[in-house]
Image (tube, rainbow, N blue to C red):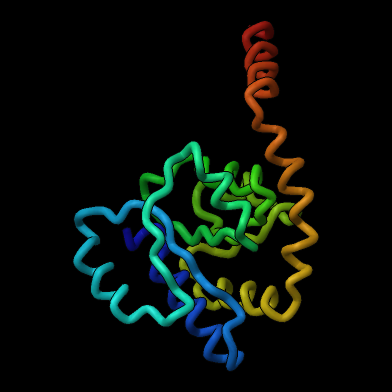
Amino acid sequence: MREKGIEDAINAIIEINESLGYTAFCLDIYGQVWDEYKERFDCIQKDFPDYVHYCGAVNADRSVEVLKTYFALLFPTYYEGEGFAGTLIDAYSAGVPVIATDWRYNSELVTDRTGFTYPTGNQKAFIEILTKVAVNPSLVLRKKKNCFEEANKFRIDKAIQVLIRELESE
């Protein structure tokens, strides 16, 4: 859906690649297309440059496997119903840093150690981050180890320990 920021991501990648004069980024889009957005997305998809692809939906049990092949995860959401985004934890489990809006809980999960956030709706800031990364990929690469460390905080055995401590303190 549009509110997931998909058009922002597409436009940012196109603008950066065109301004640099080469394909600095390829964009693979994953996820179910909502019925209300399908007609618009189909129109947009017809004009995708050769470095933008819609790859369909991925089962949750395969998300880490798919994500581990990527450089970064773009998460430009401003969807009103967005809650705690498990996609971010999946990215960290795959060692993939995240570039996300500061929408809702994103700023709590995406830190300077694990990625970048920018003000929701600020396309210029989004493009600035991506441009810096295109010129200096090590800005993302050096965060990969931190992503694995962050993912460990969300392992089931760790979560159960926190839950037990909380229940015992009541």
